[in-house]
Image 1: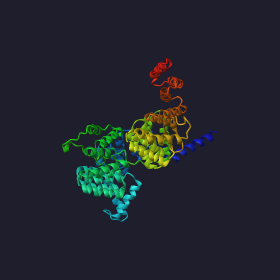
Image 2 (image 1 turned 120 degrees about the horizontal axis):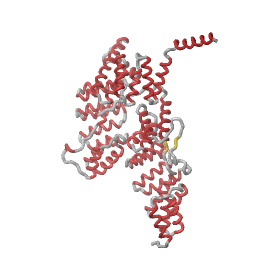
Image 3 (image 1 turned 90 degrees about the vertical axis):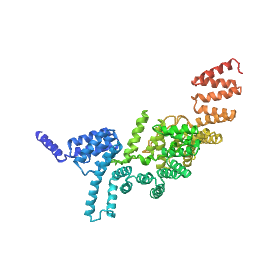
Image 4 (image 1 turned 90 degrees about the horizontal axis):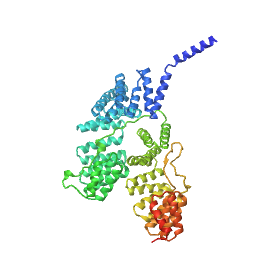
Amino acid sequence: MKKNFRFFLIFSLLLVLVIPGQPKENLIKKAQRNMDEMNYNQAIQNFEQVLRDHPGRKNIRPKQAFAYFKRGRHEEAMKVLEEEINLFPDNWDAYILLSYIQFSQGLRPEATKTCWAFEEIFENFLRKETAKKRLKFSGSQGRKKLVQKIAKENPNIGLPSFVIGYDLKNQGHFEEASRIFQEAFLRKYDPVECYIQLIDLELVREDWQAALRRIDDAFKMQGDQPEFHLLRGYALYHLKMMDDAALSFKTAVQQKPYLVEAQKNLAKIYYMQHDFKKSASLLKTILKISSPFDFEADYLLEQALEQKVPLREESRPRLSKELADSVQLKYKYVFATNIKTVAKYINRSAISLVQSGRLHEARQVLRSFLSLNNLFPELNYNLAQVSNITGALGEALEYAWRATQLKPDYRDAYDLLGNIFFKAGDFNSSLGAYDKALQIDPKDSMAHFNLACVYSTMNDLSRAEEHFRQAIQYEDRVPGEREKDKISKDELDVYLVVQNKPISFEAHKALGKIYLQKNQKDKALKEFENAIPLEPSDPESYYEAGKILLDQKNISKTVIYFEKYLYLGGKKGNEVQELLKKIKSKNLK
């Protein structure tokens, strides 16, 4: 027995001696999984344990720093990155992430200095590699191919060049900035952002024609981008081509409805052209979707409503190009775990939070994940839905729109988009979104109902009536089926459906009100009575039907409906009680 125990003890010790790195590797993988699933606190703890055991381990601190950064612990993030650079001066990732965090925290000089340090290391590496392959270094195809190869393996390699180019532009070194931005482009930094800066180099020099040529080149290389239309409008405005400028801004808004800067520039042009109605309409929408509150738009709206335009040129509103002046760096996080698996996990987590009523936490989880990877239409839709419910209309608009761009046949996303536009007061865009939903599914009862609501608001009662009828015709769900927020659980196709009462019920009530407006009381009564069996606990239908029956002197039925209204606790209880007293005392006038 002792011999067997001694053998087991020796065998266990051999296992420890043979694979000493196994626990460490498992802990690193666990921490990486924590990172991918945005469990940053646990990731930090696991990385700290790895560094306690192996303080000389490379590439752990940059991962830990990213977790610190995502938790808002910026000083700690920068500190561990500086430690990594001191230990491993050739660690590209540490320099790039450090510059990104510094820039995001407003430490622009420090970020630029870090980027120049990276550039020196990177250029030395390129020289050595090209020398090994006996290629020319300066301006050669060999260097270009090598840089492109590296950029495929490191998606953030162009970020330092972009930061340096931005700094050179702000210092007025335009030619050197142009060369550096083109280098950032070569290194696969966001091409649209690179072109925005190249265009802005001409705009800041007020060379409007050169800017337009650069914009034409951008369209050819990167396609039809709303940001390019915004900058075109800015250049055309300064060339006094007001109508062309307005068209460019309008196109930018059509392509990206949440691009508030384009909307505001367009509103300013309308304002200066004395088209106060159009200007005020745009400014009202801006105020509904802007966060934080847009004080400039509020002031301009006041001026537009009063139809006041300053006589002095210097007092008139100035157009802006903040998308070029105040950049937000783009850092690409690389997932170690299968991205679809992570997306599914994040979606389930958000859904669970919604189910428990923690909407703001759900919104934060979805927003944080989509800042890392925004290519899942269902997650964009879910965030738009939660943002819409919590009143963040601008955010809801952005993510609902993105969902439709990622999945052009996403019917529910167009329905939601129409709802958001409606809340923002943009009725024409709302109609367009619902029309798109009906192109995808002509029998979408929700889209017909919502379209009818928009037409009713716009006082187009005939079209409203038509679509309310179609909503009733196409609703194939039994009453109450969608009373609660429901969740489909089919892999990634998980989204929230928010509908409190049957569509047919709401449509019958709406039709009743339309017929009352037209003084067609018999038709109105029929619609309210059709609504009652669909939602027997709703008091309003009893009230409306009772009022019509009272006018028609159908006393017995009026009493039934009014008493049912009181039983259900209708808000106009005092009024109905008085009417019942008059009826029962036969003192009707």
